[in-house]
Image 1 (spheres, helix red, strand yellow):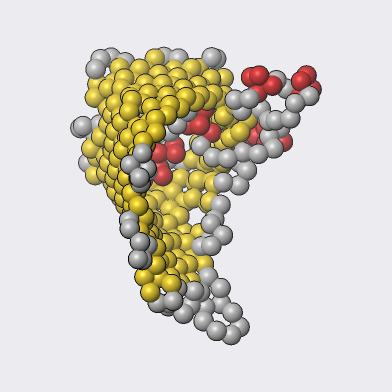
Image 2 (tube, rainbow, N blue to C red):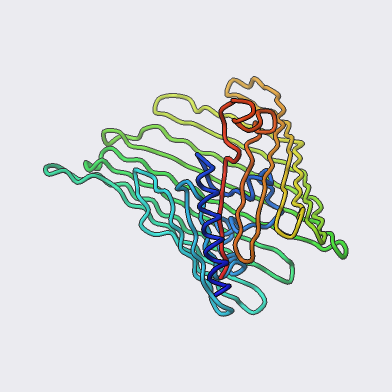
Length: 345
């Protein structure tokens, strides 16, 4: 009786929490950490599908309509199904992951499929298809996660003469090297290639190609009441736009130095505070070889609440600290920008 009462109270608390928030999005915990990639989170499943095995038997809802995860499994295999807000052009048909152990290591596969188009009563039907494949492998001996992703999107207006084609290929890696009892050196790597092309009236149209590389490394401290992760980053991007009968246009960007630090602190057994800040210096080169320099600072914070196997996470609206609640200041705005509820069973 007590177990069911606790579950009922947890669900009631979640409902009350939702009613206080007008707009929410996804990844509330990581948003409160300012996007820190060296602090592990359930959202890692989107990049490293093998990470699903770390979150067995979980229901997670990003309230506001973004997405929801249902993950179930045991020591032999883990299955995850994602319900997500679809792209209107190609509504999601399938979005799922599978993870399995390979000795001490782990293998994961993610697959997504979206299909759209219009079939008129007369004439040719248009089509819009999107396919995503993720394959990940974790080497436990090296404490290293790796993943390869391939995403494709092709459209056709039905005539075969007007089409678009897009492909993105990504490589991701994240690892930790133990430096002591409670300290790791965390490191990460990301590489992405993106290409887009089109045909217009049966002829080649505009096209583009882009490449991005990011690397980062820094210490991760784990304590009884929380954790802190800080790392520096270097990123480079290059984009080339092409069109018939015109010269290619190339732009590039170099981001260095970059820095991000985040902390997660258990204030009590139930209440959690999170915060993070970042700074990045960027040098951009335009097609005419003119250069611009810029620096960008940002910060985020969030709160979490645990009750047995139930957890709520919210990313606090940064403006709330200056604005205060509406009944005091009269200013418009919400307390949270992102809210997520999860329950482990």
